Picture 1 (cartoon, rainbow, N blue to C red):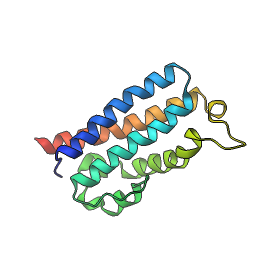
Picture 2 (picture 1 turned 30 degrees about the horizontal axis):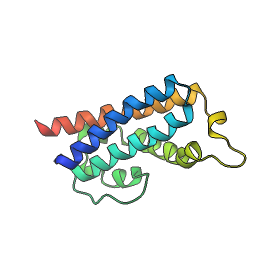
Picture 3 (picture 1 turned 90 degrees about the vertical axis):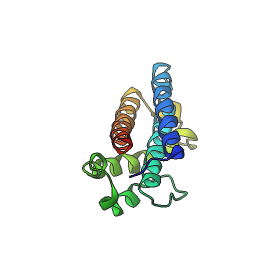
Picture 4 (picture 1 turned 135 degrees about the horizontal axis):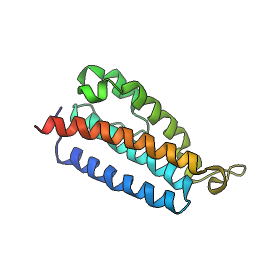
Length: 139
C-alpha cells in the first residue's frame, strides 16, 4: 500500500469533515450528520483504493470493490472489511434522503440524536481503521 499526496489529502479532508459531524450534532442538525458521515466514509474508502492501486470509480459506495480486492488490503482494513462494507452500504442508502428528503420524508424531522450518534460512531470506526493502515504504510 502506497499513500501518495492525493491519498493523504483525502485522509485530511475526512478528518476535517469528522470534526464537522460533531458541530452538526451539537446543533441538532442530525440529518446533516448522517449525510456528511457518508462523505467521510466515501473519501476514506476511495483513499484506500488509490493506495492499493485500484482505479477509483465514480460511485458513492465502493465497499464491494474493496472486498473484491481484499488480498491487496493492509491488515487493519482486511480484518474489518465486512463491517466497513456494511457501514458504507448503509450510509450510501441514506445519502440522498438525509440531504434532500422527499415529499413524505422531511430530513430535519426524520433523523434524531441516535441516528447522528450511530453515523459518527461508524464514520469514526472507518476513519481510525483507514488512518492506522495509511500511517502504517508510511513507516
